[in-house]
Length: 381
Ligand code: SF4
Ligand code: SF4
Image (cartoon, rainbow, N blue to C red; front, top):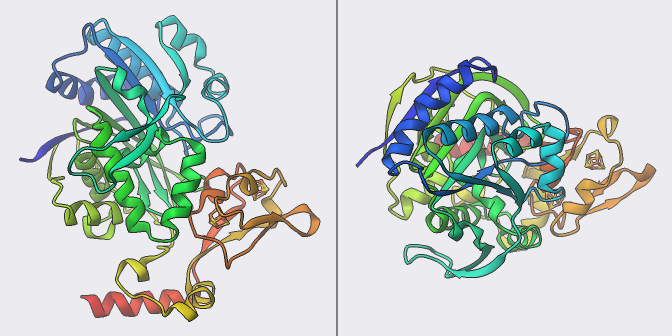
C-alpha cells in the first residue's frame, strides 16, 4: 500500500509561513501515529557541525524550533533533541545556532547520543547485530528531521541517511573502512538502521536545499518545500523523484528494491515542481553496475579512472579536521602544512569533504571515467 507523503510550500524560514507549512505536513503524520499527548519524543535533526549561520548543510535552526512548537501545540509531550554530530558536541552547535534559549523555554533538553550498545537487528535486516545509540528505545516516537542535499557517496542524503547519526563516531570510521568503496554495502547498513529505528515521523527540510558538492560543501538552492511522512524510505523515494533522481539511480533505493522493501508513495498537498538537483559526480557507479576491475589493476586503475577527493588549496585554512576524520588515515599533513591524499589507501568515503568547514575538498571525476560511464549507461539501456 502506498504511504502518503505530504508536501508544503515555504519560500524561507520566516514565521508564520514556516509554521503554517509545517503544521500542514505534520498534523496528518502525527494523527497517523495516534497523536503526541503524554508521549516522550526523540527529535533527531541533522546537525553536522557549526560553521556559519543558516548553513545549508544542516537543518535550519527555525525548522528545529518550529517542529518542536507544532508538536507541543498538538498535545502535551516531552521532547528530547539528540544527535551525534561527529567532531562537535550538540550543545556547541545549538548555542551556535542561537536556539538554546528557545528550546529551554519549551522545556526541551538537548544532548549527544551516548549509550551505544550492540543491538540484535530485526529479522529482515542483512546485518545481524549493530552497535547503535540505544536511547531511541526509551521514546514513544522518533522524529527524523533531515535536509534535502546531495552526497558524494550516496548521491542524495535524506531521511534514511540521517539515521547514520545514531552510530558512534568511532564506529562510523570502522564502517567506512569495512565497506570501503562498496557503496551498496553502505546502503544496506543504512537500510538496516532504518528497519531498526523505524522513525514514525519523518521530515525533510527542502526550503533551502543543497546541490553539487554535498553533503558538506555544496551550493544552496532555494527549493521552497517541506515534506513529511510516517515512512522514511517512502519519503526519500518521493523527494528524490522531486529532485530529479529516479529510484533506480539511487543506490539506497536500488538496494531497498532488491530486498523487497516497499517504498511506494502517494504525494499529497502542494507538490513542488523543481528543476533537477545538480548531482555530485557518481563515485563507484562502475562498481555498482557490476563492472569490476581485475585485482592487480584495481588500485592503479581506480586512481586513474575513479572519482577522487581533490584539495582546493586556495580555500584551505589548514585546520586539520579532514585529517582527523579520514577513516583509513589516508590524509596526512604535507607540504606547507596542507593536507595531502594517499589515493592508494583512500576508500572514497568523502568524510573529509563532508567535514571540511571551508568547502576546500571537492570530488573530481576523471575524463576517462566520464566517458566509460557514458558507454556503460548506453550499453545498459
Ligand atoms: S581521503 Fe577523504 S575520501 Fe579518502 S578515505 Fe580519507 S576521508 Fe575518505
Ligand atoms: S581541507 Fe578543509 S578540513 Fe582539511 S585542513 Fe583544509 S580547511 Fe581544514
